[in-house]
Length: 280
Image (cartoon, rainbow, N blue to C red; front, side, top):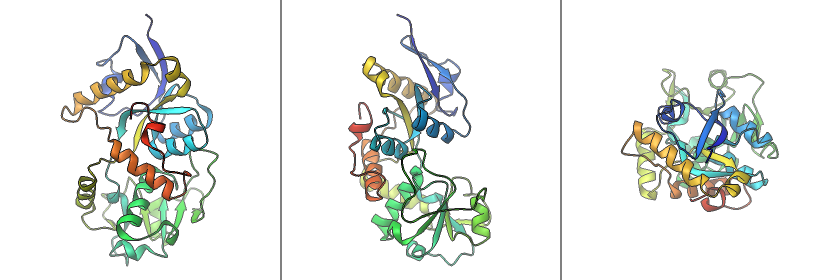
């Protein structure tokens, strides 16, 4: 049997390197890798034009895509997971000492429907009592899914304004950013945010999920073995980097994120993971 070749866009990381260099292979499926940097640009292309057979995609993007009947389905192969609260930051001398100080303020973020932002808004509301509409959300770009328009508490930043500049210039009071954590002029809004996150996820017996693999739904219908094969391949590749964590999919983590999507109006209901992810 000839292997099924998938045109795929995923980030090249230590967890996927074995797929790129051929250390992990399958006799049933092979990959035609498309280089997209940053990989978030591939999410937009997949959601809007179905450009790839398979693609890395943020879980919140997948949820919004499902809302608008975009024919992509996830598989339980996680490519990125990280604790969100350490990415909620402000200037070191900002008059913000606790989450409640964010009420009535402005938080800059790449996109309103960014998965890290969904996690943080959900945590701010459920753990700290700060509702999403009590904050103005300053965004750099629109949703990956074209059908999702601006949200009620969302405003656009000036074109080409970087998030750090928004903080320094007083346009934003805080920010959600993956890139400023080690900056000397930046601190987390919540002290010891990493430990706060570890404790929270331990209580919920869950792990965060940010990015996973999605596939055109028609391919999964045509090849009923494909979801399991991809899940196995990505788990094998990950195990070469971290043998203690070969398959980090957390159904509870996915369910929590999907609940937050619904609470924030990104989806009309809280989808069950099984409605978006084959084999969840």
